[in-house]
Image 1 (cartoon, rainbow, N blue to C red):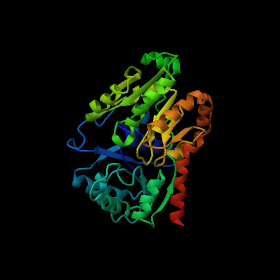
Image 2 (cartoon, rainbow, N blue to C red):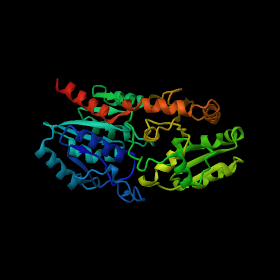
Image 3 (cartoon, rainbow, N blue to C red):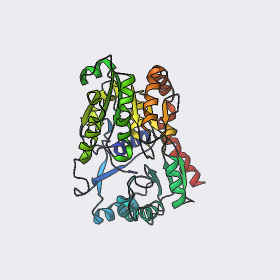
Image 4 (cartoon, helix red, strand yellow):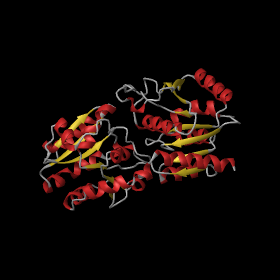
Length: 373
C-alpha cells in the first residue's frame, strides 16, 4: 500500500507518488491511497489540484484520508489492520501530517512501514517540528532519503532506523509533445538566436532567485542575446523581485511567467532552454533538477543539500557556491563560452539509469529484505 498525494493533486510529491506507484505496479499488487483533503483551506488558500496531465493518474487510487479529520484516521487505521499489507509506503515531507500519520501507524504489528522522506525536517522551521517528526518516523521500519542533509537529520532523531539514501528519480512525464527547441521557442515567442537560462518553480526565499537576478547584469554584459526566463508563482513577494529586476539595468532581458504552471504547460519552458539554474540558498533535494534531466537539459545548481549528488559537476552541469551572484554568473558564462551544452546533454542522457524508477524499486526491495533478515 502506498499513501501520499497523487493526481489530481499538484506538485512534485504528488508526481513522485504517482510515478512510484506505477513503477511498483509493474511487479506488485499496489493499493494507492491518497487524501480526500490534503490541507485545510486556511493553510493552503490556492487551488490544490491540477487536472491537466493525466500521465500521473493512478486509475484505481482511492481518496480516503482527510488529514484534518480524526474520524478519517481511525477508519483508515482499521482498513490497514484489516488488509494487513506486506509493506506500507508513506510519503513524508512536513510535520503537519504528524497527528494523522501517528494515529494511523502506531501499533501496527503485521505491516512494515517505509517512509519516503522528501524532507526529514521542513524548509521553514517552527517550534516542535523535531519532536513531531521523531514521533512520526519512529513508527516506521525504514526510510528512503534523498540528501546527505536529510541523512544527518535522521541520524540525530532516530540513529537506529534503517535507511538508504539515493538521488531523486527523473521526472520524464512532462515530455508530452516531445517539442523541439524550435517549436518550444516559437510557442513562447523566443528567438532561435537567443541564449536562454531558466529558473522554474514556486518562488521562495530559500530557492535563491535573488542571487540569479543579481547575476543578470554581468551575464547579459557578456551575452547581450541572453534571455533569463523566470517561471513560477511569486505569491506575495512578486513586487520585491520585480523591483530587483528593474534595478538590474537589464530588465528587458527577463521573461516572467508569474503563477502556477499546469503540468500540461511545463514542456515548452524546458524544451526552449539552454540551461536550467537552481540557485538555492538551502535545499535537501530538488525535483526541478530531475524535471530538467527528463528533458536532457543541463543544470547549474548550488552546493547545498542533495544538489551536488544529483548534478555531476563538469559532466551534467555545474555546481557553484550558494548565495554568490558572481559564482552563478561565472558558471553561466563558462557554460556558453566553452560550448558545453551538447556534451552535457549527452552525459545527462547517459546517466538515465542512475535516476531510474526501477532503481528506487530495487532500494525498496533491498530495505524490505534486509529488515526481514
